[in-house]
Amino acid sequence: MNLSPTGARRVRTRVAPSPTGDPHVGTAYVALVNYCFARKHGGDFILRIEDTDRARSTPESERAILEALHWSGLSWDEGPDVGGPFGPYRQSDRSAIYVRYADELLASGHAFRCFCTPERLEAMRAAQRAAGQQQKYDGHCLTVSPEESARRAAAGESFVVRMKVPESGVCIVHDLARGEIPFEFSTVDMQVLLKSDGLPTYHLANVVDDHLMEITHVIRGEEWVSSAPKHLLLYEYFGWEPPALMHLPLLRNPDKSKLSKRKNPTGILFYERMGYLPEALLNFLGLLLAPAPEGQEIFGVDVLIERLDLAKISLGGPVFDAAKLDWLNGQYLRALTTDELLARTAAWGFDRTRLERIAELAKSRIERLSDLAPTAGYLFAGRLAVTKDSFAGTKLDDDVLRKALALAMWRLDAERTFDKEVVERVLKGVGETLAVKFRDLSRVYYVAMTGSATSLPLFDSMELLGRDLCRERFRVALDPFGGVSAKEQKEWMR
Ligand code: GLU
Image 1 (tube, rainbow, N blue to C red):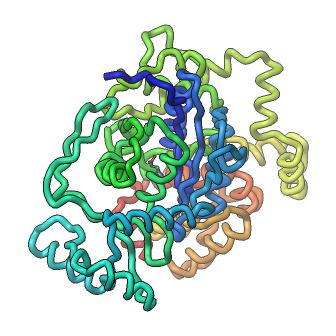
Image 2: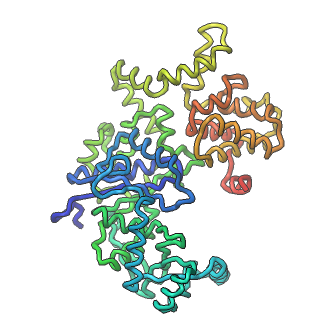
Image 3: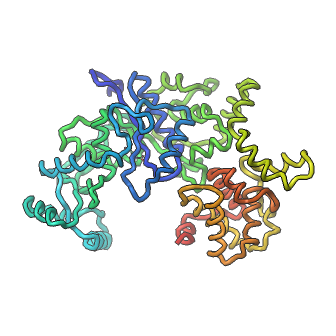
């Protein structure tokens, strides 16, 4: 296996996040490997925004992803914010390109128009479910002749474009770390490439862009490995050389389940708000990529670039061990000079604008200057020590209380923006859902968010704390009540 690039092709890697939520530590992890691999081989590292899912993609999420990755200290040579010779780097700005390539596949007979209605597809899936079969497109529209297909499209009938897939045979995916992974074509779906609105799916856009952007190595999460046969087929249909592929193991909770925000904070910006240093976070992620012998665990990205060996990345799920991150962060903090420590602390949470706002909120509530720090302390803290007893003064029984905390957490998560108006609307909405007077409900939120039933104004406080820290405080407050299950989430959010 030759992992180092040969020949004349310049190494080009990319990270391609979808802006459909908070910037995830998994994105930083994938970005870090791609960054280091490109640097190691004197190549380019690209950031591409994959916003083909128009219903779920938001500009707020894109902004947050860029902010979070910038904060991490990684930089990219090309991307939506820095430009570059292969742009645009946001897929929604490239729609016309994908239509051209879908047309090419139609013309070469490697794709076909599918006119099936949603009702027919639903009936098909129901029948497959009932028969215990794999759910995939049954090829109904493969029999439509090219002439009839063109005529129906011209007459304005709605259609999607699907790729053809051989009926039999095996596709071998060569993964740089996993070796050969065989996939029976009979299990590969005739993937939709272009939706009825003319916009591409992830699969078409991803392959077209990786080719046009001359990506040589695709290093991404293992959740994409089952897409690889579709992608390799597309490369073949277009007559393009596919990039080398590598699928990284997913980050895990300490109990080995997939890292999820129900159990652990997963947002990059949560770690920023908690006061971790970006170099400590990258070091921590680097240890998951290139384990170091004891005593050599503290290293910067420059060392990781040297140490990184894709073939040696352990495929057992790397555990996101928060205690290890704490230890590392402590080491980094202690290595700062006092001047540096003060500068970093000021930049983190004691900047003039934030302090002014806090002073204005606190002014009418203090008698002595010595009251200020205790009054506002929770705004500079991470997790709060709340127990069941902390909620003793509230009038709600445990069940309602749990629902009040969980609904607020989930509904705030679903909001695009997070400011005091949004917070007020959402929390009051929970009061209406639960038919609880907001005066009674707000005490619960005061305790969970500020640690006390009497604090600076709640909505302002939550805005100052930010979405990530509020979410974590909700999670911590739910803990003594046994947390909430995925099933409850589904039921309560209905
Ligand atoms: N947009 C995909 C994601 O969100 C990228 C997958 C890939 O790298 O091909 O992870």
